[in-house]
Amino acid sequence: MKFRKLVTSISLTIGSVLFVSNTAQAASFTSNVSQNSNAKEDIFLNSITQKGKTFSTFSYVESVNSFSNTAYTGGNSGAASTDKGDNATAPEQTMEDTTASNIAAFLGNNNLNNIIDGEGRTFSMDLKFDSFISEGDEENKELDSLFFWERGMNSDLTIQALDEQGNLIGNVMRLNRKVNQKYAGFKINTEEIKRAQKVGSWGVSLADLNVTGLRGVRVSADKSHSGPDFKVIARQSSAPKFAKAAKVPEPGTIIGLSSVAALAFFRRRKSK
Image (cartoon, rainbow, N blue to C red; front, top):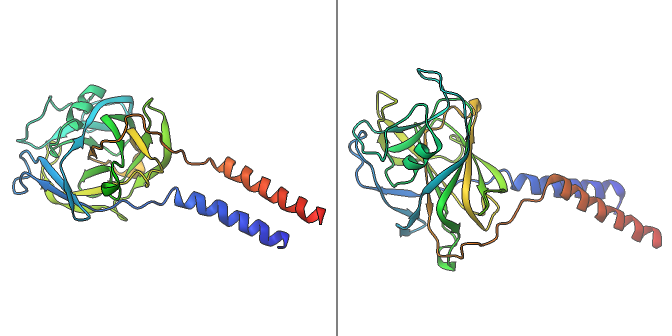
């Protein structure tokens, strides 16, 4: 093997690892809801069907940490706020100048007409689920673990897994409105808007995030995401609470390992 071929081989290996960690595709699923004829009323998620299997045991957001939000100054300012259908029930009042506990209340239920409304500015929040999320038994291993809904089908959302201690693990994934968002089969009309809008959905597996389990997920957006208006619910599993989560190798680590391999190769050539 000549030096140029070796360098090319190493470069392709590095590129392949980085490519895989950033281009996972969200999957489609069917949202089985209580009704889809009145966009202003409650729309409860009864179950989800994916790959021919239907399940209804979910884990919900129980708390929000590390909440960073563009400041609300009145009118249509700020970044993330709570929102609901005009006639829908909600655990608390909607808040433009929202708090972490207010967001947790709106995400902590199965009403898909209780959402977080983004305004095209920067926000970030760490969402902790009420149970540890893992793939579960072998029979359900191929199913997704995180399910997102987005009002309008016109925004992106960036996510990354969190472990039991709230540390970031795995790779960052951007849920793209144009590439992998699917129509969820219903519309919602909330207090923030004047007409009903289609709701899109993304299904995300633990493999997409390169982890074997998670306790939460960081969701974030900036101006380029165009203001995601979202809801997230997890599929509950029966796996051990403290399952380990895999971490994506840092680019520097990959390069370092490749360098060691190259050095070993040249030493072998020299010894011959």
